[in-house]
Image (spheres, rainbow, N blue to C red):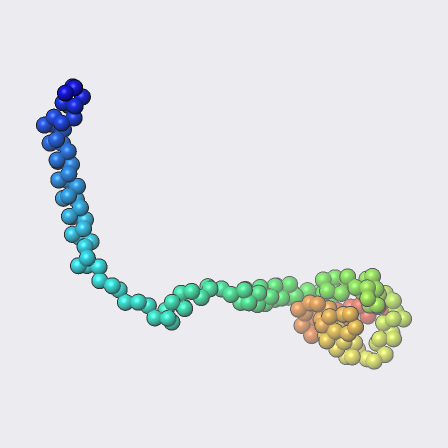
Length: 157
């Protein structure tokens, strides 16, 4: 036999390997003994209601949209002057005459529309008329719409 083979099977190496094997068996018994089959009792299965509740989204897109709309409507329209209301909702169409909208400053166009009365003009602004969406596409209150209409009429005379 060669010297390398003599060292591989030396009593010292066999003792070390045997010790490692005993250590592995001991650790395996400790770990398996503590976490063995005796303690692995099946936990009760959750009911369908529990599972459904956990699978539901925390926030739905509809709730997010509605809360954002309410928050932005409250923050955007609170305490605005009639001029600011006009600039944020009316300016785009009533300054250019887009889609047949009467221009601000065109007294003749506004006098014709005012012939039906201020309340009818405000009602048209609130409910929408022709190409104009209700409230001019804004979230303004009825009082704010009235203030914006009165502002436009004052600027057009």
